[in-house]
Image (cartoon, rainbow, N blue to C red; front, side, top):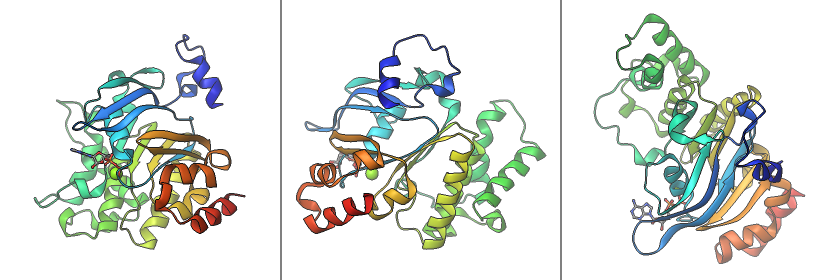
Length: 268
Ligand code: ADP
Ligand code: MG
């Protein structure tokens, strides 16, 4: 499938464009200073699947997503979203940044955070109507946060905040969802709630890409993985790309050999 998509690149699409790779990256290189944070990375996300981006701390996982979205500049590389330039496809992408990168000290209600998700639908001159609020409430309901609508976002726990950010992403009605470590520092109930929402998105045919740090849950949660350590290490179905060998390459000495063996056995 992945190979087929890659060889189709550059051809005029005949099929409906949902069959195109929702996110395809070629030769992406990003530097913050002298050293590249991401070097010559290719990625072809498979449509309708859940893909985990895996790699050690500082491997360039967040940078890959941010550079693909144009949030940080890249030195070189091409990015296509559903086979088209990303700037024509932004309405189809919902991005949930790493929570630590958002400062919610200023007073904002939960419902207002979720309403940010409908602004694209609203347009610059559109008026916020009852149905927008109803939609935002429905999205809060999907993540189990309806009762918190009038609360200040800064007063919620990390897990509750993460659910609200997911609700905002849901309100965008995107086709491609990009989430950066949505499970970091959340309670078990939130993790369950988030994964169940992500699986329901996939059931609707959406594509979900998640930067993920917990190797133990990769096989449970995801169909595909993308392993990175500045360079791409492996990409593909979990059963093929998430192996003792690829983990050792990505993590080097940072994972005990026993841990790698254990994980690889879990993969089968
Ligand atoms: P990951 O998400 O895999 O932990 P990042 O993409 O955040 O990794 O970071 C990749 C590398 O780039 C790291 O060495 C990190 O220290 C560096 N880096 C990330 N963001 C910045 C920044 N804004 N300025 C300078 N260096 C950065
Ligand atoms: Mg990161």
